[in-house]
Length: 633
Image (cartoon, rainbow, N blue to C red; front, side, top):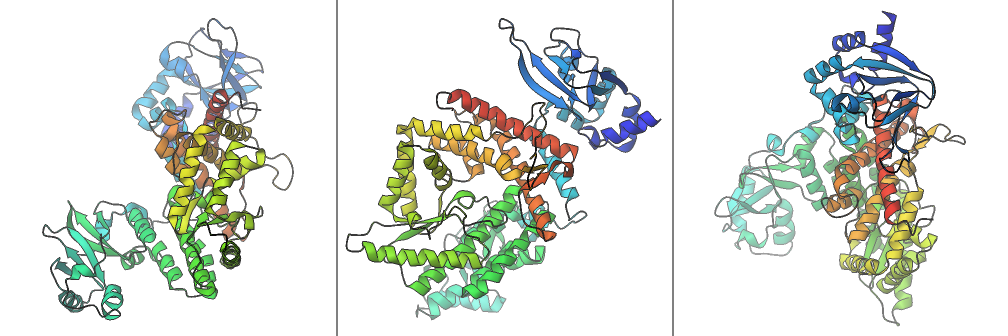
C-alpha cells in the first residue's frame, strides 16, 4: 500500500498522468512495478528486443542515442530525467530504433503494455500527449496550470476574453439613411437620447457614424450648414465587426483607432452597436477606460499618475486568463497612447517642429513586446534640412528629445542604461544620417554594429510623418540582400546565446551571484526566439517588427523555420506568460521587478514545457549553425 501511495503522489505531479481523476490514477498505480538501473546499464538496445513497458523515470537520467547504419557514429538524440517517459516508440512500433542507457543510477516505474493501451483507449488526452510529445500539443494545459497557481485562483471574471461582441451589443437606437440631413440626424439623436447615429446605405450596411463630437466640431464650431447631407460630416468608413468577433479583439481595434463606437453586423447587415461604456459595464475597468483617462490629460502632472496606474490593468487581464501575447498587445497600445500624449505636449510647449519628423519605438517597445515598463528605447528621424536650416533644426529636435526623455521618466519609463534614446544626439538625426548608419552597420558588421542592428532594426513608427520610417525600412530591405556577411554575423550572435539545457538535458540555472539558482527568462528564454524571428525576417525581407508577426509572415515559406512556426509561437507565448506572471507577483509583493525565476517554483508540467521550449530553440540554432557555418566563430 505504501508503494501505491508513493506512486499516486508521484504520478499526480507529472504529465500526462496528473490529468487523470483520482480513482483512475490509483488504479494505474496498482499496475506499476519498479526497476533499478545502475549507472551505465543499457536499458534498451538499438535493434534489440522491443519494450513491453512504458518506463516513467522516478529518479535519475537516461541517454537516448542511435548509430545510423554505415557510419557507426553515436548520435545522441535526447536525455530524459525525472518525470519523463521512454520506450513508447518501441512499444507501439514493434521495433527498437534507439539505445537507452542509464547515465546515473536510475529508478523507473514500469507501466505494462496492455494497461497502457487500455488507458490510451479511454483517455484521448493521454494518447495525444504521449504521441505528440512536444510543446504545441500541451501548452494550453500548461497555461491553465499557470492560471490556477496565480494570485487570482477562483476568479470567473473572464468575459472580455470569452464573450462575443454580439452578446453584449445593444440595438442601434439611432439609424439614419445616407441622404438624411445634419438637422434630421441631430433631431433623431436628441429624440433617442443617443450620443451617436449610424448612417446606413441602401442595403442596410453601415457606411458611417456621426457623434456628438462631430456635431460640435464639424457643424457648430465651423458653421457648417445643418441642411447639408449628413454624409458630409460623418466619419467613414465606420468600424464594423461581425457579431461573432471576440470582445477582446474589438477592444484592441477601438484602442488602436481611438474610437468609442463600433457597429456590429450579422451577415453584413447592421444589428447593433457597442461602445466603450458597454465594455466598462462588462469588465468594470476596461483598457478603454484607461485609454480615455490618458486622452483627457492636458499636462504631464495629470498624465504621470494615470500612466503609472495603467499597469494595474495587467492584474485584470491575468485574472481573465488572457494569453501573454494579448496582454502584451493591450499594454503596448496603452504605452503608445502615453508616449503620443507626451509628444503632443512637446509640440505644444516647444512650438511646431520646423520639419517633418517621425518618433521611432525601438527594441521590445518597437516589437510591441513590453510588459512592465522598463527603460526607454526610442529614436527620432526628421526630414533632411538645407545647410542653412541645419543648426536651428538640430537645436529644436534636441530640445524636443530632452523634453520627451524627462516627460517619459515622469510617466514611469526609465531612461535606457545604454542611452538608446532620442535625447542622445546620435539617435536624433535626419533621414540621410540614419541611412548612413544602416549602411555602415550592414556593410561592416562589427560586434557593436550587430548589437545596434538588434536594437534599431526592430523599429516601428509611433508618431509623426510615418513615410520617413518607411523610407528607412525600404532602405534596409534593399541593403541586406547585397551583404550576406551581415546575416552571417547576426546568425553568429544568435547561436552564442544558447538556451540553458545542461549536459543531461535538464534546465541549468545561475550557480552564483545575486540570482543564484535562478533562470533569466528574458535573456535565456524570450531573447532566443526574438533573435530567431529577426534573423529569418531580415533574410526574407519581411518588413514587420514584432516577433509573432514575423513568425506568421514566415509560415509556409522556404526558410528553415517555415514548418516550425506553430511550435515557435507556442514556445514564445509560454515563456512570455511565465515571465508576466512572475513579474506581476513581484510587483504585488512590493519587490523589485526582475526576470529571474526559480525552477522550484514551477510544476513538473511547467518545467517540462520550459525544457521543450529550450530544446526547440536549440534545434533551430543548430540548423542556423549548419547553414551559416562559415560565419560561426
